[in-house]
Image 1 (cartoon, one colour):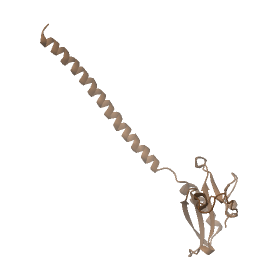
Image 2 (cartoon, one colour; image 1 turned 135 degrees about the vertical axis):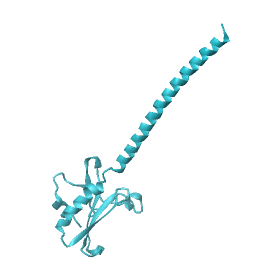
Image 3 (cartoon, helix red, strand yellow; image 1 turned 120 degrees about the vertical axis):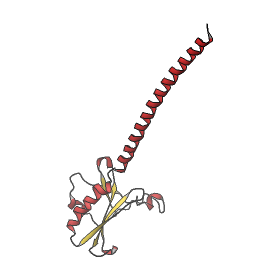
Image 4 (cartoon, one colour; image 1 turned 90 degrees about the horizontal axis):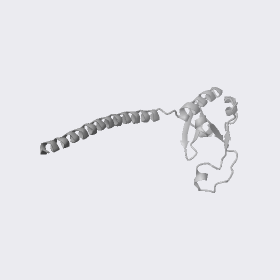
Length: 159
């Protein structure tokens, strides 16, 4: 057997290996580019995620303000571990907290669009002073909003 034949066998196998490796590298590069595009789309989708403040609280405020024609509203929050978010209704042209009407919400199961109101008339004293629970207002219970509640139900609970 001639050395040239042995060498040519190697060259053929090496060429076949490199051809297959190049083909696989091209397929990997295409998949990586596709994966990169999909990750970018996913990121953009996260950025477009609906906000419960914009989609639930703000429309509630827009409806509630109709019951207070002499007032303007401001949405504050979310704050703390419980994501408390309040709607404050100030007299027109004023930001005087003493004449402010207010209602505070906490999110429930947001996958179901659930929100609750905070009942500041009951202090459960569950959390000791200066604990995270107490500092975050968790001594005040969340009250579920009935499924059949209307805006008037919320207006009746303003303090």
